[in-house]
Length: 442
Image 1: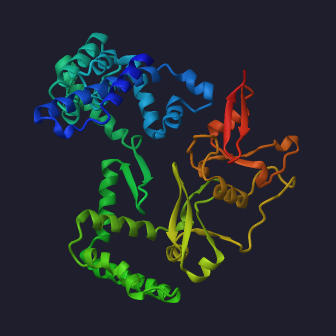
Image 2: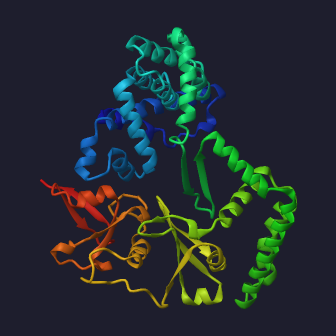
Image 3: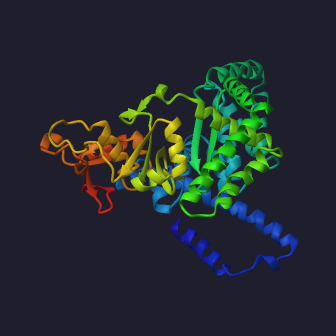
């Protein structure tokens, strides 16, 4: 298998300098479809290996093979874990789909849809009907794309088991309504350009409720209020620029330029909804938010004392997002948030809370938890991106063995790696950068 893949890579290296601009239209079309088929075959091979590679994760002390491959291949951890689950599904109950994927007869996205369709089949459906459903879906894949496949798949029982199709469809609809909350999800990922993308899946009824809230904020009468807020921000920015000896007009234009384009008409409906969602978040009372990570739901912002005093410069927000534990904001924004949000400024060089408690107590205090979050940001196991707020404070030298409840003796570890550090089958090594590397004991 390795030799075959290496031969493919070697062949690709041989055409690395080839310029496709000189291909004819027909050749480009043929090449594009062949590349898609080859990608499907290579992906199927990777999934086939991932399905039986649990020993690789165990050997390296990783949470699972998806997490290990993400680190080894410098890939997205979430996607690799999803691929690992998909690989298990193909190996366990979708042999025909796997064969079609291996032959390039279906694309990876089509295969994922077919797997979803097969998962929805009744648990008591006989094996012959299940095999027929898989066969029909693979045949459909020769003509239809993923979205059309999904729509066809929802009615697949009318083809393979028409006698139960109507009753089963009604049951599925009832089940979908009851399980809507179980399917609810939200992902938050920084885009690296000062914005963060939210992707949510919520029940229809809740979505309608959210829409009604947002439409209340998008009332046309609020446009002037939004414009007034922009003017206030522009005045504050100009004042800060004047204090720092920078161009006042440029600072004002940086705020009012976007305002003139958006607050004063020409603003899209989706943009208005985005602004409304921001307003909705800012109206929430932080004192009513829950406790997590050993402390009240809190934003922690680090900035030096001079920046805090002048309001000019930048500050760092310590967040809870996997892969993006910190965000940089202006000092002006930090001061504004301090008025609205449950924000704790960790001012470098200013008065600090007591962080080192020695042997006085076994458990880490809230102040220490905040300091650990500032320092570690995430689980410190090598390659793990579980947020620090979700992790547990671990005594590097156990308290029962004389270890102090101090920051120098503490490290944040997620639940999986906290269990692993106490597992006698593994040896934990603390690296110079503070990460923890696990080795399987021989």
